[in-house]
Length: 222
Length: 218
Image 1 (cartoon, rainbow over the protein chains, first blue to last red):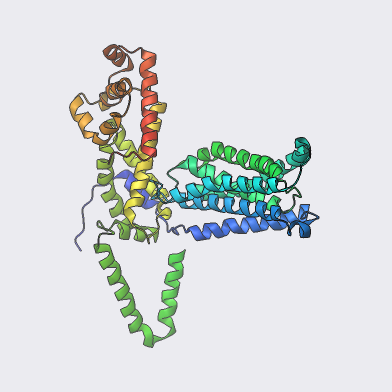
Image 2: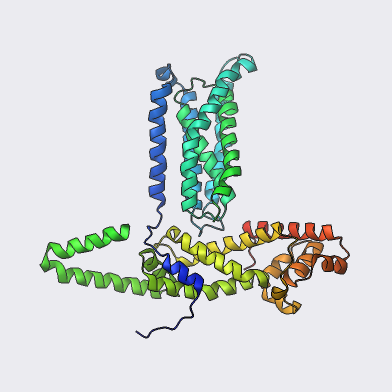
């Protein structure tokens, strides 16, 4: 094979000198890591705060399942959006478009279902009593605390990956982390009132998502 | 790591039974041939995917060759899209990004879209940072007195600039491509110095958003 004469380029020399074996990233491995952290958080949270005392009754009703399933679907879709977006080849967002549409649909569908369940229930106490702000603040704090390790892990995955739309990936990371956090908290929280869930869970998820949107893009610049 | 495991597997397979060795060698040769044929097909026209796969496994020679071939490609890519003074920085940035993010390329996928994604990201990055430094003027040595050549070489950029407000496009062209000072551009266009800065900042920011939202020029 003839030796090719190539002009020396200091930058290319430096990059070649820095070459090490890398393992191509696999989204399946990253999804497993994330799922593992969610499982660990569920176990820890249940051990520390416990499941709601009326769990057996709650599992008979629709409201608990509506709450848990909506949050899980929502968090899962957001997490999938994050992992897909970490491939630089995903720029025109064609592969992301169905996920974004599904996400944009999931939230209103969850709220409408909640409203239907609510409307089916006869009569209601005063609004303030329903919102029960003491529990609500506890809910905000717990969802945020549960979301924190997940945001941290997603930030690490973002640093390792290469999103060409860091702002959108960061938003999705916040939604995923808070969604999983809220899902975990749902096992402890004894409020099934859709209004309560919409206000406090929704508020917590939005809060974490916005913080993540503000902070993460700065940390993952490349 | 996966490569190490694969190699360990190879070694184990070779050691286990000497009788299987010719069969194994034949299988490996077939696999290599299949890779070569696949590489010759349209999926990897320049062989860059094969080179990057080798680079991921730590092979320096194919990696050097890949980078040396990517450099002129990137140079062409950015000369069509950025003012001449920004091209070399963008090329180097992109080469570094390709290096640090090389594990994000999946060898099972085509190399082209991955490369294009990174180049495009760095293009947007350049437009953004240019809009943050709207008031910076080009160093004397980098400005191109030949206006026409500079503008037409940045063809894709020119196409995008057509979508800007004329006042924004005009001052971007004067200051960022032709290398006039802010004051000269102000005198030439009749805009105040402050307005020239604002128009450059807003115009470049808008270009970055346009590219990001997918209204790519080509």
